[in-house]
Image 1 (cartoon, rainbow, N blue to C red):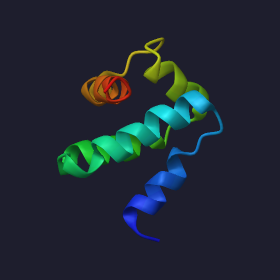
Image 2: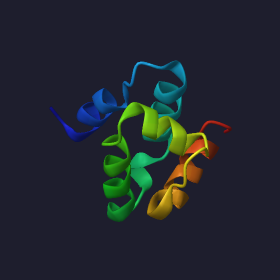
Image 3: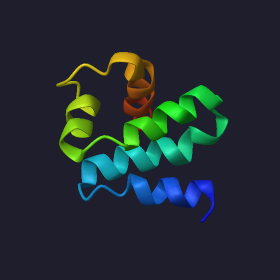
Amino acid sequence: MDELARLKWQCRRGTKELDFLLNRYLEAGYLTTSREERILFETLLGLEDDELTSVLLGEKEAGEMRFLVEKIRCSCVS
């Protein structure tokens, strides 16, 4: 399974909101990002759904992933 197919599978979280945000970022910005940002994205995908939802919706501090989380939020606006 190639990298994008594997990530697309990991972006399937079972809620429309998470699926939309994660897939939109994957399709719109992932391929043009730095290696470090790709690693952060994979780390973000490793979070449990409830924690991931809280981080993406701003209910929980994103820490070192703050910049990436903001990019993911903004990718759904364009």
